[in-house]
Length: 273
Image (spheres, rainbow, N blue to C red):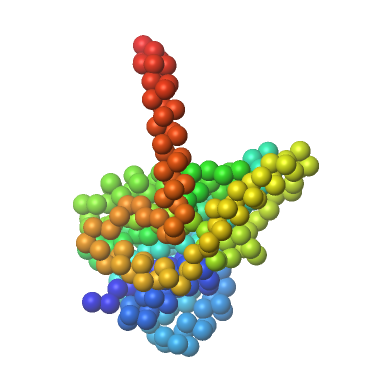
């Protein structure tokens, strides 16, 4: 049976690739973007199997209305993809209140509103998949994108809890954690805080480290077939890396954490009282 997808941020990047992959195999897609005009080419190719919707995920009432419209139009929802988001660059001291709040409004609250709003429809359908687009920056952290890291760590936290809460309803949750890919994440869609001269050396070091992490950027087009395998799996993973680099980053990071926690265990026991 053909599935019905609801994908945020469908105008480009992973959202566009995954919408195309789903449509190519005969599924139906409610594709959302801040400007639905950017989705016209999908409609031209795939016709009424695409429902283009203008949506700002930070507007909770608009999110609920879009989900209701998609369910009414297609009769069901099976796969929810929270892809809308952006990267905020800046040292922690440089980030303004407005920038911090905007980052969380989109990357955390936007995903939360879509997730909450979709659950009644997935239960009605008898199950389904929620795909949360996180990042290697959702389990590790890097200088100059700390507030972005914070937003993805928050997404990881509520999604892990969510997976436990909805399992009995046949709803599967997967956090996709990409490394560097040839998308526009660090380009025109990114935001940059006003820089302080104090951090010039740190910024240069961070840029050099990032260039090494994304020395071989992944091909977004290759992810379409993979996301289909995930939603088709009987037991999809809670977490999955996309790209070659994340596993080594995570391994080094978690080995360091475990070593530090073990070294501090005497203090932990003392604190127990």
